[in-house]
Image (cartoon, rainbow, N blue to C red; front, side, top):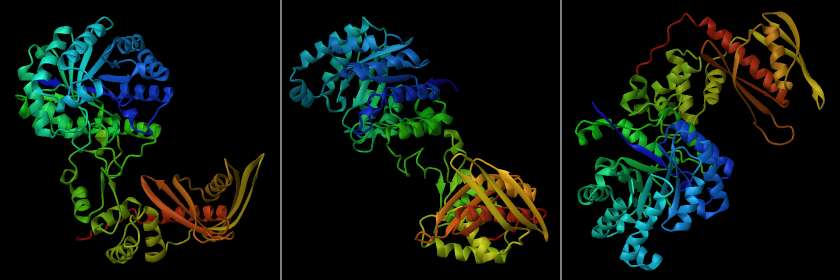
Length: 522
């Protein structure tokens, strides 16, 4: 099957940064641009150089330091804007000027106060001016979806003759619906003379929640460039989300092949960089990603409902149309909550190193449901408490008899412990990066056990200055996790007790190693 490439034009640094409150510093813009190059975008719209000295400098630095993508600068249809854009992107090996002017009746009458003939002349002059700086010129008729078709055909024909190489069709205010937008692209391809020599691009806003759908409808009807932003950032309700566009094309290759005479549509995007890029943009802009956001939201690959979890555990394709690994995640997330079934519950217990008998499963699951009715999500630490404190009691092979810790400003943290090991007393002393680290190293020496510490947390379980502190640790041995808990008014003592508790559970689990997992009928 032959392939046809869809160009990804990323405007996170220009249109995305126009989101209220999303202003980026020059170093932050440069950092995102470098990651966009790693991601594999074809064109980076680095900024609107005429708008401010900072915008000019940011665009210039991106053009100078980012290798790979075409670097574009935005310019209105006037000589000053175009000259600023040309100078800003001059250091780039591959550069483009993107110029635009409004073409809808409402914009021409109230914003531009220009006649249609004047607008055409301004567009043609802008493209010719841009051609004196670069060979690659993109033209956008702003608010194209509310423009009159005969005028769109006229102005696009004129800018093609003037030298435009890419024609972008913006749904500037998110007004169009998918069928409507797709039909617009198809009609322009049919009616505009010379358009075959140009790349047709989409640029859709999300005011009606249609930005991605409209963009893909444009691709289906012949557009071969999509303008988008990471996480869908942009003015008002935002732009088409890059990650959704790319994964839509990637996941539904069969659909697009059926629409293009069996040509497979592909992009240059390295999909395993999607999640990393999304997180970077979120952190630098301060825009938190909503949990139910497609592709990159926290819940995008999370499953709680019992039927769903059961299906996923049997065959991922039952409820996942793409794998989390594809976008750079480690795997799916099974959320424990009131809708979790026994299969998901038992599987999570097994992941934590617990092998439960059928009786223990029933007892633990009943208690789990009681807790799940009170909490939105039940965490691994909660499961450990249910099983360790309420279902089974583990033999204390190791018991902490004595703990002394010395630490302070300018003092190397040290700890000494006395452990009872099957009736035999063992002592050890050690130092560490802090009092807890020192205590854990002393415990490792006294017990001869050296598990990997995966997680450590501590919280107050009562109020007041003499509050009880509860420490929870998760350790791992041979890919099996074990959770321990400790409670004390002294948080260092609570931490040490939790570590010893986890080691006891790890040692107890070794004794179960040869036993087959319990099968529970669901």
